[in-house]
Amino acid sequence: MKKWFVMSLIVALFIVSACGGANSGGKTGNANNGTKAVNNANNAGAATEAPPAVEESTDIVPEEGASLLVWDSKNQRTVLEEIAKEFTAKYNIPVKIEEVESPDQVGKLTTDGPAMIGADVVTFPHDNLGKAIAAGLVMPNDFYGDQTIAGNAEAAVNAVTVDGILYGYPRSVETYGLFYNKDLVPTPPASFEEIMEFSKTFNDAAAKKYTLMWELGNFYFNYIFFSSTGGYVFGSNGQDAADIGLNNDGAIEGLKAYQALKQVLPINSGDASADIIQGKFQDKSLAMTITGPWKVGDFKNLGINFGVAPLPTINGKPAISFSGVKAWYVNTFTKYPNAAKLFASFVSNKENQLKDFAATGAIPSNKAAMEDPSFKADEISSAFAAQFINSQAMPSIPEMGNVWTPAGAALSDIWDKGTDPKASLDNAVQQIKDANSGATK
Image 1 (cartoon, rainbow, N blue to C red):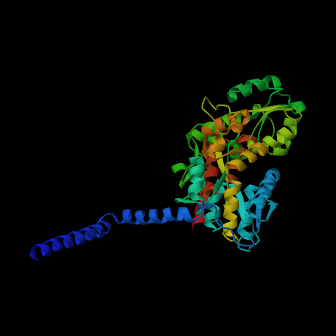
Image 2 (cartoon, helix red, strand yellow):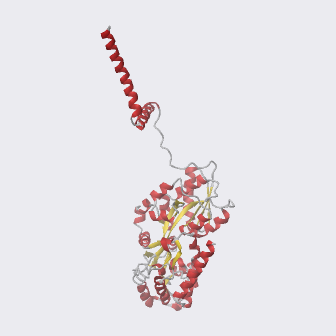
């Protein structure tokens, strides 16, 4: 009996120990491992009893009954209508398009947004973003933020990010270059000095035939004469409005080179409008002009045999152009924020950026689109890409709005009246400072 009792006790202790060991392993071991084991067991059972799981959609769920209004420029309406039809077919969300030029959209949204009559999705250059944010007009790009950051060039993402918050869905990057008529200029000039030399044999002022014409009073195109020799708009990469470099020694040097070009184009600045330039470029009374990729489609439709090259050097230095990032944004006052975000993501994806490029020449911001053979093989886009390397993003802070008019007036005075560049630039900078001070009071 004693022997039997001892043997029974040993067996009992063994059983308890085994059970306790199993429980102890589940409790004192890694709790996550235990959870994974249970989940794996459940999944294994489910695999034999249920169909495979459907991959979860990465798209935001649009509001039921949503419809959208989108603003875009006239020259990009055709391709946008095609994209909108595909969006409607895929998501069953009607899209209406209204023509509003990109630079005008923030101003129009300022009144139409709060009135609930503005577009749900808008598109404008990044230098207008600061004004839009200050007025509370656009929503952050939150749901598609990671996707946007991963898919687009870093410079494009940074341009539509303010104070660490991503707002835009990048659409394209822009800068400008030298357009030349291949029938008149077989090899594009590498410097403005070469242009001046060519003009001696090509120009005929009586016949209004000129070597080069561009928008003389437009600060956007003429920033090259400030920046290439050391001038700048605002310090700290365009964020410090108190530091204005438009009248420093470098800017004055560049504007003297600008002023000297009047021998190439002996006309008043007001006579160099975009329409006049296009007409003369078409009839071959103009050999070259300075403009951007948005004109590629127009020039092709006019049958002009043209090429594009990086801008000529200024005083032996690379011409540093303004660059911009055009992006889509969602109106803060939209009735359908989810549907609007869905459209903004859809219209800015790789495929649709390539469609925009094919139709209008807009340079894609999407990294995969930039590597696409259809883009890389295009000599025009390659030229803009080369110029983009020597470019600076336009400042996006609200004070940039105070720069355009004084800078344009200074350019006109320097060109038309022969005013001393230093005096004109000092006056422009003072006007900008006064305007900035008034804006912050």
